[in-house]
Length: 484
Image 1 (cartoon, helix red, strand yellow):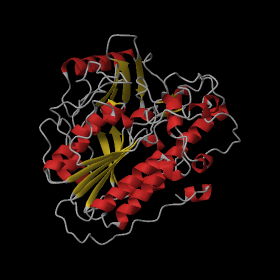
Image 2: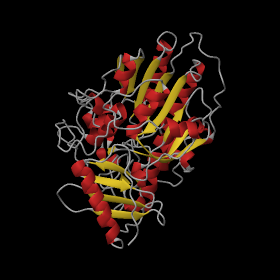
Image 3: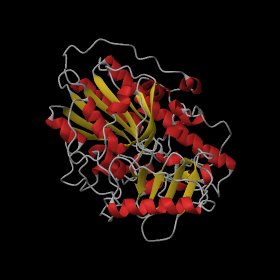
Image 4: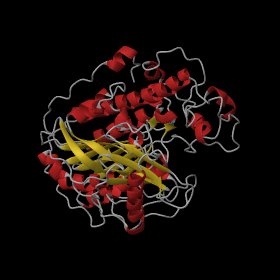
């Protein structure tokens, strides 16, 4: 990739002009799903957060119908994708821990044999299906997230992926860790140390994993667009998930101060022991990785245009969750951090034959709704196990999505989100945790109002218990909760 300067990072991408339809006319639309990890609506320019430079995604969303209030049904990475791939709610149906070689989180297990995935559904409908992903959790032993894909390509090296073992002596963890974090080399490489082993031979921006993912996806299109339509190409980019390690130019475009400390690609969970410049440094690393991933997406979308696919391909852009960036002194996501910064995600659908440019859909959408919506747009029927609902009516009419409350679960905790309130609590036995945010006065959810509103908390607490104990209707609840 051409080395970019700060000036070029600010430049708007070239417009995507109308192009001729591919020579092989197809009745069925193709589908491209662009999935990203740890990229919230709060970190996307199109959603009004101009401090993050995401020109390519902004342009794609500008050509799409965009859901303004999209949230996961379950978190984090694997539970979220179980929902996206099956259209079926995960929380609270999976209440037991499942075995995994590194992670013990409810819902982190493989898909059930009776689940029916989007890829399996489209494969049966005659689609050529493929997935390109660097999300290594999908490929651990026993996982089956490649079901229904005619081909799958795993880009190795993310996070704790045990890709390499040698070269340990070359790594000095003190150059990558905060003073409050342990720097002893682990006996068995994990975390930051394993990632540094994996990336030690990178030489150019082409080596970064986001670049490899989208370049590989573009190559797949080049091989298949001419003879294997209709197709479903699913792309999973683990970036901008930790570790926040962008190419230097992308970091420098955000870091305006002279910082000389360790490169904090996985900073502490809170800012309490960090200086102001260290926090600015960590934020610049994340923002730089967001912008770099956006640039890789832009290069892929240019390939889509060059192949003449814009006029017969449905394009979905979706994230699993966001992250804290210093709000309430917190960095990263977390099971108790189910506030707006972590849970509101960008979600847009670009339809090649509908003039949805600039359409912004209000009302709550969740990941459960994505599969039935996409299938209806492709003229296919959703499998019976899908618990989400199609949002095609709202897309077509530009009307508000009905329903005034949703639930998002993560492990032992869950959030109920309603127009006026966000309630977060522990639903299972264990240490008590309860937060309440008055969205009428505190849209960014920065001040816990639980102590001042005991009656509101009691009402939400009862609702959450009912949801967990008996299950909720699979669309949305209908709550009327008033301040005490």
